[in-house]
Image (cartoon, rainbow, N blue to C red; front, side, top):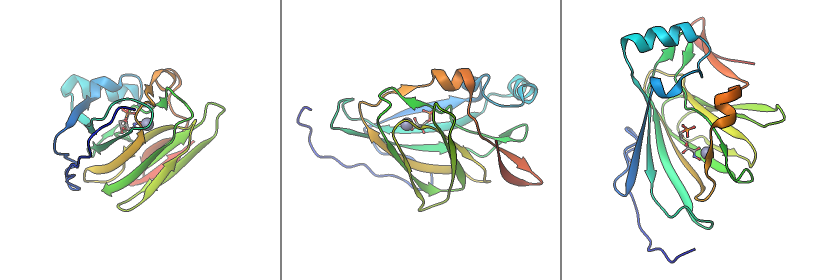
Amino acid sequence: TKLTFPFKVDIDFATGHVTAPAKVLTRRLSDLQGLFMDSAAYEQMLSRENPVLYDVYEIQVPEEAGHLASCTTVIYPGKVGKEYFFTKGHFHTIEETAEIYTCLRGEGYLLMMTRDGRSRAIKMTPGVSAYIPPYWAHRTLNCGGEPFVFYGVWPADAGHDYAAILDKGFKQRVMEVDGKPAVTE
Ligand code: PAN
Ligand code: ZN
């Protein structure tokens, strides 16, 4: 680990915006091809518009062991069919690395699963801080009517592995049933 100078950023809990040095990553509907359950609803929505599903504001540090990377993620409210907008979801490339997500605003779920088929869901509301252990893939979603904002911290060298999720998806889904979010297997 190289010597790095201490620094601070300001996080706006309402918008998730982070002051520099942050890198912004925007994910639109078209970036999540094949991930939503209702593919007809997906194609229909995409033929009309290509909304931003979420923005990631990453606080930049060297991607090396010893450093901690962090970011805010803002998932906007919305659904594809009955399924709430979610993140792509991933395992870490170095699978034995954990992560902590703390909810700053809104209402959502953190879905987690292992390669051997175990799964967990944690309801996220402001002040809830969830621990994602090593080896657990993770995806978040917004099941409320306002932006869902959370702050995540992970080992900076962990890396993101999206392949397994793009291939097999997530075991659990959260859909609107009778006007309320329901976690389905
Ligand atoms: C988070 C996620 C972020 C966006 O920073 O990367 O919420 O989700 P996807 O990367 O699945 O699109 C994190 O878990 N980092 O490790
Ligand atoms: Zn992660």
